[in-house]
Length: 229
Image (cartoon, rainbow, N blue to C red; front, side, top):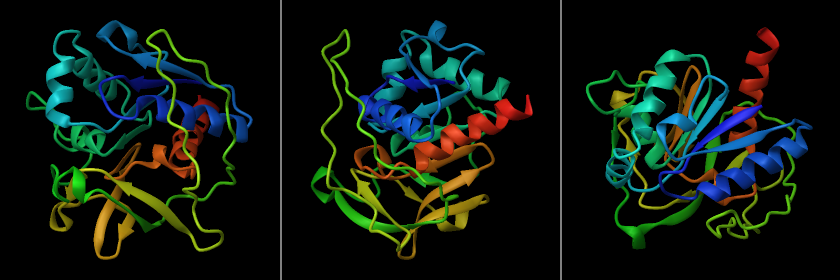
């Protein structure tokens, strides 16, 4: 499997670590492809991750190399291929640029939970398909830019209760009245995760936990498409 990871901003290397450790648990052969410019993305990419960050900055940063436009073109060309958007990545799915139609039918507001100091962790209720994935450490060396993932530990889903450890950092907020797709995650009365066909968007950061349900969903979606092909 080839999973594209948009290297725009946010916890990119933690997403890569999450994908690779999930692949080990699921006994899958997965290659993570860093996407920095338009030509890095082609039809061989089977799934995509849009990480968190600051959505406006991500749009500006991608203009020179044309990455964001190529990502949107790829999603329009391959509508069945799965995409996981986290935090700002959810905004990019809900509010694409240049008059494109939204990739998820959900209204969303930027930084609606407040500033950086209002960031928090909380248990959230997730109704994503359950898979038996354990957190498997994957030894990593620094990449060409000297980057390695943060050491994530101690943030686990409580055993048996079905909750997910939500990490919210300057998080966006879904408008409950503007959602016309499947709701998959809630924090109390708040909707914090949706799925629209092959697109999954959450306002928190699953890559900063050791609960791999969302990355497992992405790989299992790719696997199911490969089986159909």
